[in-house]
Length: 433
Image 1 (cartoon, helix red, strand yellow):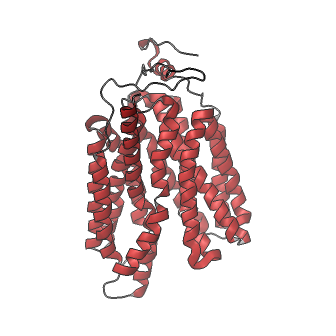
Image 2 (image 1 turned 180 degrees about the horizontal axis):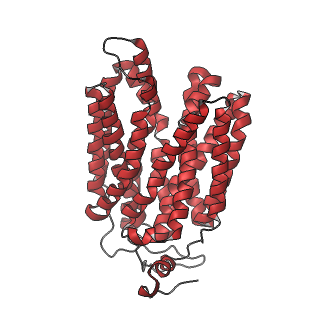
Image 3 (image 1 turned 90 degrees about the horizontal axis):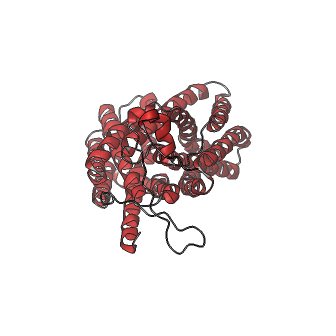
């Protein structure tokens, strides 16, 4: 790659990271949730008139809308390009938060946060990673994916205190207007920097040790359609492990503030911020590690470690130690974050770039379904005596199963291998050793 091309690629990486930093307002829901609950309990004339049991509904619907909008957004990304797709995302997020500012009704917030903002997150998120990956060699897939998606995981570090300040200074609905303007401008503005490489562009592979020049560029000989991807057993193994890894992580992320409050009181936000740093770090570290030792090996390590942490959570939470809880939360966040780097990298390795947006969008549905199912099961179990411990044990058992599933994923050496598996006699491809 020339210096100019390399600089262009990094511009796209940083634009995608910036967009994800803005879209990470999703993780501010716990802050909004607390303000809504306080408003309901105040019984003021203009207070929220919601059933307390329904406070989390906008967030639950948002996660589903996020996951399934990724499928449509992925197709848009493949057809009309990442810039327009991200622009749509910014507009949807802005519209959703404006609706939340306009009305404090349950319907307005379910529609605004759950449907509009949730879909906007999906459109923006789906457009950030693919163009960045296309500018760099396959040797940097994990690193680049990790950097871009780290923005989403790191966002709570600044969004949590910012949201708390705005809510205290301006109230709930005025704060929604401010956030609508800020995040819509950031996402829409950065969207114009998301550009794909010129047609026919193939990044050169980095030079081998001792070589003076970069290795010749390798062009993928096969790009799977979504129907071909769905015929591959690898898709279902990846979907199952993504469901488990994401669901277990989201279960803890949604509960960490409440758990920390018992031992840390008003300083509970520290646990949330440190968990966010762990989340972002896991995305980058897992990306770099997977480039070195392979995606499957990295996924096996991360899921196995997460299983151990879930079982360890039972005595840690019971001990009431704030320090141990913060350490546990940061490590769980680290492992959860690794999922958001590894699975987009798997999708690119196995099924190519041409239909990458749509293919990864379908795979990403595991994130939304996992968060919904494991979150709901956890809530049901927590309502019973000793339910919290049972939730951790269930999550740990599922993660142990996911670790076993990874052993059936063959490491990918070249995209051409998958072409032979899926296309059979229709594909005449040379498989490299």
